[in-house]
Length: 225
Length: 413
Image 1 (spheres, rainbow over the protein chains, first blue to last red):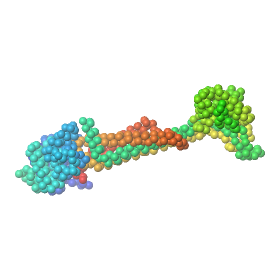
Image 2: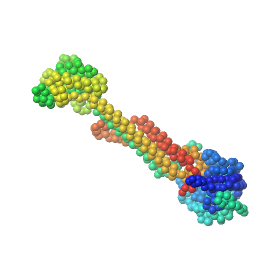
Image 3: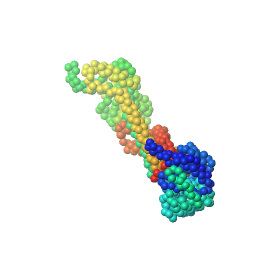
Image 4: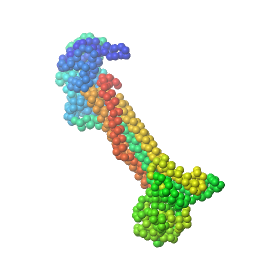
């Protein structure tokens, strides 16, 4: 599903360049439940952004579902993002002025699905994450765990092939964290979606099937359970 | 599908009330100010123009008065009267003028009577050309003609106000009215836009006035129309007449009290120059106001985009294309500027109408201010320009918004 080959990425830092990714070779199969671990500065977020087509890379090759993702136009990148990838962020990133239902429906708006139809689908997905009764609430009226569940529903609605979760439990307490990871796990098993979680928490990583350790921009080792 | 886009925009605007209000207000205010400015500018112009419509603009008025300087051994304070010969000379020798006419006020004529009605009005005597100098409009009959003057006929032309007071609804033409007890036949009825003063009048032939009311060969005023509207030729005529009259009456060449010449041409041209400047000023301020409006919209759009960095980042992560972001920001700008611009327009035009109504209702005579108002097409095109410019101003932040990198935007807290 995801295949990277000698991936390099550096950011300009004043006159110098900050070399963040120094040749990443990675392969993730369809339907895997993987976590990427590493301390801050290890390049895990950069890797996630590249995989999520939110950022470009300098060298190497990245294939998503055997499609080469390189030097895409912004429009094309947006189209692929919409089609292949669902995002779950640490800070939820829901639109505060939209209800839970409208937030979940947003990716379908960009897929040009009609309003009534996308609201109907969004309601189904809210039901799947157990928040059907909260559909008309604004994000600010929901707890952190509930917001993250809305975000997961939003990530799922466009039927992506990959779900990228960037520190999905970073802002949650341990019990809610567990619930969120279990929800992602359930999604992974039921919908056969590839799930990649970036985290620095061992407990969370331990709940996935495979851990990829990242250190100083290279893969430092892998664990499979 | 298209409807859906607008619903999305409308929802966004509705849920960001403060931002929407601020933008709307600045646009509405800009348009409102522009309309008010144009309206008041027009009011000023209309007012000034009306002041001049009272009398013919292309006119020279020569009045006789008292000498103010000693000349050729004569003491100052001597009363000068023009004569019929002066009139004939001016009529026959001054070039580029027409409708040369005399005018006398006939004082102490006593009451004006018709049957049982009695009143007092101003009686003026003049030649045929005077009607063009006062811009009289004839409502019936005719004005005094050369034959009336030559034969010193006892005929009179009365204003519609005089007619109403003396005759009520009855026919006046051909009837006889008494002026100081002497019967005059009514030959015409006029109206004068110059106000009540000019309406309380009746005109008789100059020769009749001189004979009947003992003003033998006396003329107080001689006036005429110039053929062209330019300062140079009216000055030339003015200088010629002054020279001619001061020589004939032994008056110092520059005794402006003895021979007073009012050059309406020069005055009028001065005012048309003023109109031009008012118009220029109004447009300059108007354009600056529009620019301020555009900058305001652009500014608020920039702030709004900055404030929405995260939202735009999220939208992009959800698959929004750069084009769809540009379109979203632009459509919001257009919708806001259009709706609020329209409100500003309606409010501005409405207030102008109200002021106009108030001024007319109170019958106030605010000098040089009349009929404030704007041509609706001008107002509409001004609004159009603002909407267009506002959208263009919205384009820069929109393009900036579209280039936002989703990760950077989402990270930014």
